Length: 145
Image (cartoon, rainbow, N blue to C red; front, side):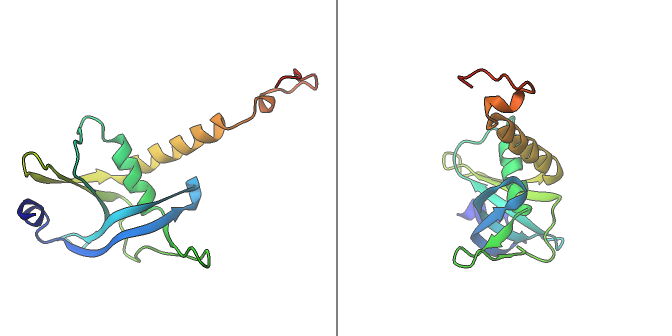
């Protein structure tokens, strides 16, 4: 906890464990933290306590971008509301806390790249979900399609 507190000194937690929906990609999830950075920006953050390999940032960057482009969701009414009026959609924070070493590191992630990744993933899923008959122009579609 000392490493975590030290690494995030100057960061102000604004919210935590908040459920959001991302209508643009038909996804939902819960982000770990909303932070005000020492320079005043408001950013989405994610904490990883397990093994995280910096050689594979695409998943977490896309995850952060998805959250940042989402909205708070009220399950009872279906209402959506903005996460924060000053939310920075270009930068997110990845906080890694190693149980083994006790080391805590903070990385700024490029959410514009992450948003490209997440949109491409959503498009790929949409294409994978197409029925086989969607690919045929001819009227004589094989019966087993």
